[in-house]
Amino acid sequence: FYKLSFNRKFNKSNLTALYVGAVTRQKGIFELIKIAKCHPDIQFRVIGEVMGDLVGYKNFPNNFIMHGSLQRPRVLKYMYCSDFFIFPSHTEGFPFVILEALRCGLPIISTKVGCLPTVLNNKGSFLCDVSNVDQFNNCIKILITNSNIRREMSEYNTFYSHNFNYSNV
Image 1: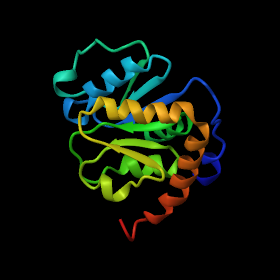
Image 2: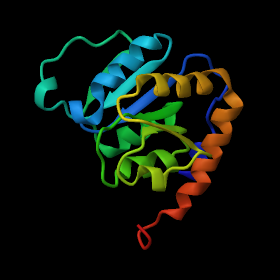
Image 3: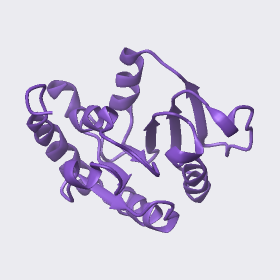
């Protein structure tokens, strides 16, 4: 993990946002669609099983790429190729995907639900209210306009992730 995290290109113009998790209303997928529509220059990659009322849903913007369920090595590959992780969930316990995103050095934009306000902090992540698309958009604008902030958040998250190991999680 460590060696790969610092090979990122922070100055590139075509950014990629990544979401990994169940594709459901409760995980904030409809908010993510609205966010993607506000940022047509960012590619939004979505990895996860489509469930419930989203099965058969087709009204995704052009910059919203659905990958379905993938094996762990491919998910990690996409994490390393992404510029930030976005997690608009309405409810959570302790999502391990957040730890993986931290370890991969991804800046994180998430909702403040479950343990996320405790696990994430303002040095490597932004926390937004549930369903608040404007807050998410403002955080994305910060990441878009300042590659130094993305770099600092990435480096911080890579080192910070070492606080989470089997014995203390």
